[in-house]
Length: 188
Image 1: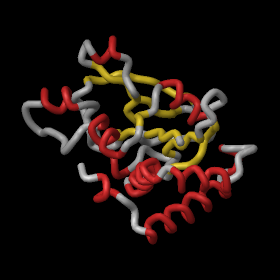
Image 2: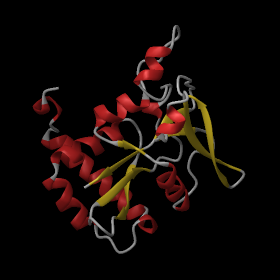
Image 3: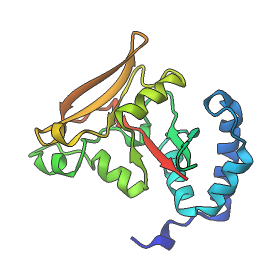
C-alpha cells in the first residue's frame, strides 16, 4: 500500500477533528479528566493514527476517547456507535476462515479489515469495559479478538448486550451475519 494514497486532505482532517470534538464534548462521562486539546495535539502529531480513526468514522464506528493508559500514557479510542459499525458487518472472523468457505464467501474478514484500517479488534476485557460506558450492541453483535486456543479449534468469540447483561458467545470463525461486525481500538 502506498502510504501517501491514504493521507487525509486538509478538509478531511479538519472535518474529522470537528466531529471528534463534538462527540467528545457530548459524551464527557466516557473520559473524565481528559481535555480535548491534549487529544487534538496527539492526533495532529500522529497522522497515521488519525487516518485509522478516520476509517473508524467512515465505517460508522463513531470513535471516541474512552481512557488514558495509566502505564504508557496513550490516549485510547474505541468505536462507540450504539450498534456494531454498519460499514464493518457481514464479515467472517479472519483470513483462514474466509479461505475455508467453499461458497457464499463474504467480501473480507474482520481481521483483514481491521489490519487494513490500522486498528485492533477489541478484546473481551475491552468489550466489557466499553459496556460500562453505555449500552452497546443491544440489537447486533461484535467479533472479539479470539484467544489462539479457541481459534485453533475453528472457533471465534463475539459479544453483545441483552437483558441488561453482557454476553460473550462462540461461533465458527467462518460464519458471518448481517448484524455482526467488529469494534476497534486505536492507541495514540
